[in-house]
Image (cartoon, rainbow, N blue to C red):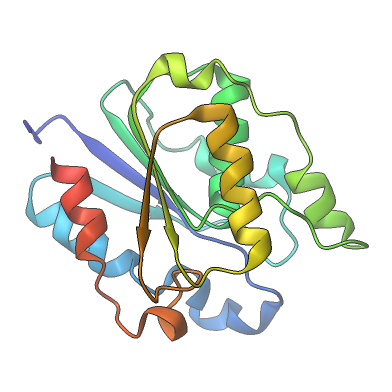
Length: 190
């Protein structure tokens, strides 16, 4: 893969509360390691830090995200609610990108949570798959039931390749037991 023109943007998930704000812990897990690995291979990679992600707001996320340049040589990686954001944004903007990676994608809001209900409730634009060369979704054998259901929703609409790894849970540090995610890097550099 010729990497000198490829860029990558990672969008983190949404923590349940603001307790991680002071350290931006919601952008931890495997993301800094993946960023370092991709940058060392010549793929310019950034982690987009979203505003108040414990109270996700699509318009606020979009305002921050659109500061980054997205081209047909861009790889977008989302984790959890970051996947829901990216799929909505791609459907709305009709952008063509190189690759879309959804890690533990989530689309099912907690009942009574108005922020997540507004964030997750939108129709998926099925034409996204016509504009993206490669779509890959990571899940785990021990992902939560609503995570499995969310994966099915995205996969029905977008197709793509599903990779199910063992014992990764929701792909957070506590579930993975490691900050490294070599399977993702391998999938990106193919």
